[in-house]
Length: 94
Image (cartoon, rainbow, N blue to C red; front, side):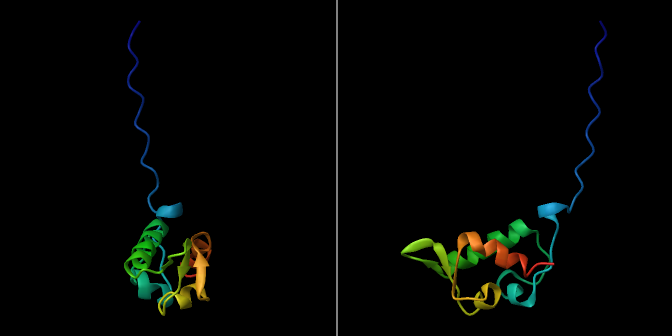
């Protein structure tokens, strides 16, 4: 029996689709993550870096993020849960 050739390599996945597509942050969000277009995952990562650097997690409930002057325009309130954060970020990404 003859050996079959190896299957053809799959074409590379389309770049910049879904979660990896760079999105433009609003001016409010750009104050925290920068003004360059970023993938959603990188925006979330930069948000967490900022939150941890500035100690904005509620010490009594680590799931709560306490908004400072830069985050309040993004969240629209004084505190949000980590689960709410992504819905607020979505409003500031195009």
